[in-house]
Image 1: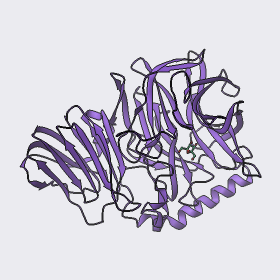
Image 2: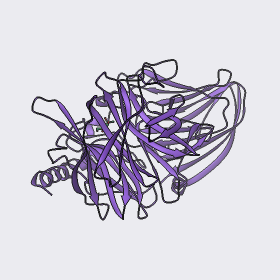
Image 3: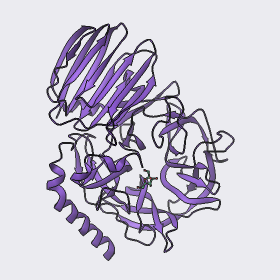
Image 4: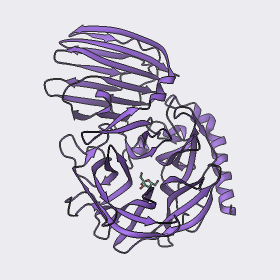
Length: 479
Ligand code: FRU
């Protein structure tokens, strides 16, 4: 531990202590989602199930509600639903990470927790430098930095970051997000035998390659996983133009299904699919847990997308994580289901059948600021809509086969909308927290994730039919 590290830890903890009373007064503090104790949270990092404990690190700026020289904050959990805030894992205190311990991942080797991250550096003129770094922990709590293990290859700008590491056939691989000197977004691959010496293998796919035309000027936060016998590259391209219902957010987050050939190297794949249909979803990271499930958590936010207009900012904190979701691959599509452990939080269960004809009914949800709702339509003539506490609406139009999430913008209070097409509606599993909504459609074939900021005191969840509907409604308080 160098002096700078000690000093940064001291300042961060002081900040937490000073602002915790203010932060805790915010009615938009979430009840069952991961948040920063103070300051700004963005990407999930180093997600791993290690020696029986889930560890989730996160990009943390403790000193303000904006971006900057990030720390790795740390939560741990035995069950993915009760989280404990741990001591800071990494501070930006060395020459190779002094402007941020940026995003990265974790693996186990010989019983030691290894985390790989990007050291972000600005030189005297403000030019960016990037270093891929390693830190190792015996107990999962305190880390010893090992310094730089991979450097920037030729042909790329310093937008080269977010290492995700895995092992295959006895070799280690690392995928990174990158930008070429011609400003094309790419995913690139390194490999290693010992985790400390890495060799650059090349691009595996990206914008302006054999497989894709124009596809963004930068790719961030790649994750390469194997599911259902296929390789899946999850990645966040920046610079895609909106088209129809797609690519409506400032930056995108989605995946390609295909086959990775590490030797070439090349990832042959199909079309890009978005992971989420809502407003706030970015930088997802997955891990395979000790039971073999593939679990995803994402940042419930998007860089540069109205971040400074969040109503939580006067309370000195901003952003949160999504719920953990179990991933499977069906017909080349990723399916996301809230992890089953969330059911252990269900209380005050209530089930009714409602039947409406062109009229509206208020759902009997005891605590809509922390609730789960399961809707199973029995009959839908034309469609319906559900209004959440006056601040968001979900609308289903059966004839068009379109599901829409509307919310009141926290930037200018206008109504904004996101849509997706579905072939029919089987069920909706909705998680409401004090300032978030996650809607799993048809068993997780589609998901809408969004922050929303209802007026405190408006606790009404209304459902109204467009012509006739019959629907089974179950709800729980999440506690
Ligand atoms: C994505 C990202 C990453 C980077 C990190 C910095 O949100 O820009 O590419 O490592 O955030 O906080």
